[in-house]
Length: 208
Image 1 (cartoon, helix red, strand yellow):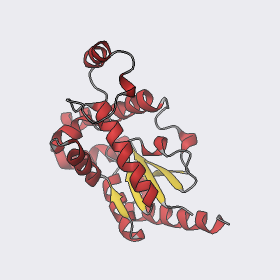
Image 2 (cartoon, helix red, strand yellow):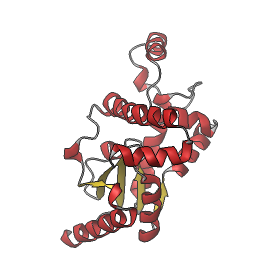
Image 3 (cartoon, helix red, strand yellow):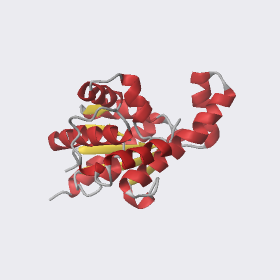
Image 4 (cartoon, one colour):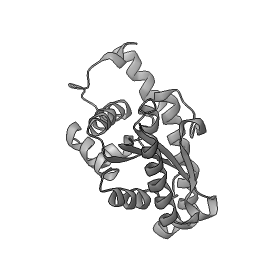
């Protein structure tokens, strides 16, 4: 029985809207922007600080300095007591919140490495959403009203996500073998939501 849907996405593909519609259709909890708020609350930091660190790597010089300062066993240090909010802490807190949500089930998760983190769970449906460059550009441009900025975001954000997955999970992005479905959102959000909804229903029918 599928209890979790983990969505990975290309920037500009419209996943925020699709995830919201899907969660509403299923009557499930959505963890997307609310996940950022939850991390900020747990870390006692500003939402903007979390956004800056989510699905990103810290600068190389910072990471090298951190290893030098704390030694090669920094990964074994507990989250509590860290005096700096950075990408490592963001990733650990995200995993904590996702693990708690997964234990409860009935949730739609967006990004944050969830498909890689939950790859061994039989109750998780993993979906990758993509779209043609021009389609994504038009969507981003509608928000930024700046062609150079829209292109810069399209050129960098997915590269950051790929580096994040490689660094923390040792995997490739998007790692086609990891996903049950890969859908082109340019066909229409309603159709994408319907496809995921019915695919989940068909998988549930196969559960003994």
